[in-house]
Image (cartoon, rainbow, N blue to C red; front, top):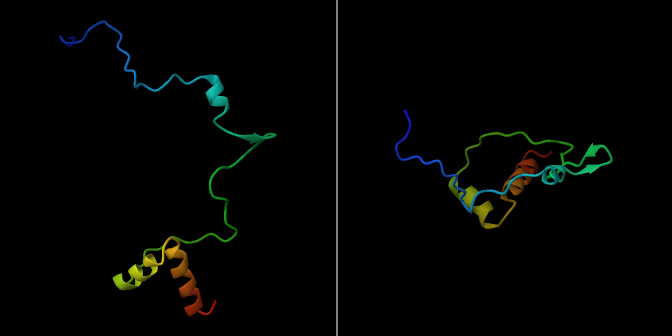
Length: 84
């Protein structure tokens, strides 16, 4: 059973994404020789562990009020408190 409203006309939305070409695909990854160049943040020598930590709201707001990097500042404060 077919949809009575469908047509045989090929419809093309002007907002459709452009066709992907081989030239586009070739430029998707950057290589230095045969080594793929990694994008984004470089890997850290010492990675951080993801934890869920409950802090008082006023403590979080104090660090956030000082601007971007508030999580790193909390980490530094905890490091100092732990005397590491």
